[in-house]
Length: 127
Length: 249
Image (tube, rainbow over all chains, first blue to last red; front, top):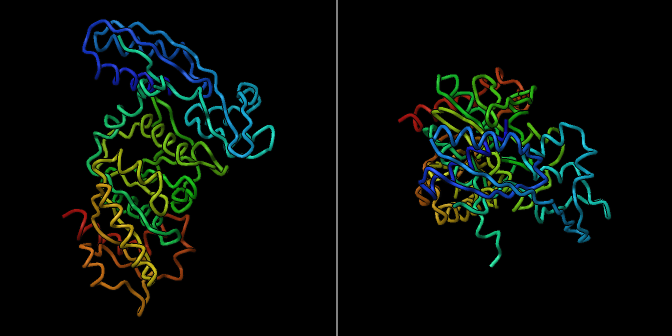
């Protein structure tokens, strides 16, 4: 599962900053990547157990906002993602930037799109 | 201050872990397109694999990915196991954005390309490799600058044709690469014809070695997509020579 690779990356970053047995982290997860939060939490806990770390995880979903660089139109992506075939949704799950290969601006139809927010996994806080 | 700047991107830290079991990273670059860079990267991967080395090939030419076409990789399905497991073709571990984008063009600006590279490198499980060959887009752009930053052990191989126009472009290109910390192991001259070759003294002035000089082959284009036939070309012979005389010394 891709979520395991992300969990590994998160835990690796956290361990570099805090060498403690009890760590609390706050994650911001972008909507675009369609991360399975259940799997992400499970993976984080399991990986932390292997390191003998007691990990507390809080996750916040950030809604994705896309902006067309041509006409300036800004739009959300949930309705677009739902309409895509599973193979394309999966491609975006792995490489979110690929959305611009599959989605056009609903206003002008161009594919010069920028993700303004709600992309990827970020560690907001480590305590 | 923007709150986002205080946040940690976990991808950046894990990349060195993902790459740590790779002994050497060879980055194949060119100043211009159409010089045979991807062909060189592909045949280099095949040849090293035939020599018994563990090889990976990473196609970062997002705008014109072609290594899968050169090698004749038809089945573009990767496995997932706690990350992305590269597909294996002729014992070469292979990753390219085409595994996801398929036949769709990839309209990336710099920021998108940088993010895609971070994503690819942070989720791909290469395992133990003797060589990772990286096929780059032509010129120096965001992707080259990202690779300079992320592949600190990268060894650059510059592929060029003997066109008189090449030399001036090479000089600028090499200067820029070196300013940005690149270790350039040398130049591969491709599509050489009898009276048409790179001025050796000029290359020497740049303190560069000519690693291989590959003659123009009429038949070469016909063999693209057939890895068995590619290995029977004069191109492949020169790559074998390069490996024995420069890479394995």
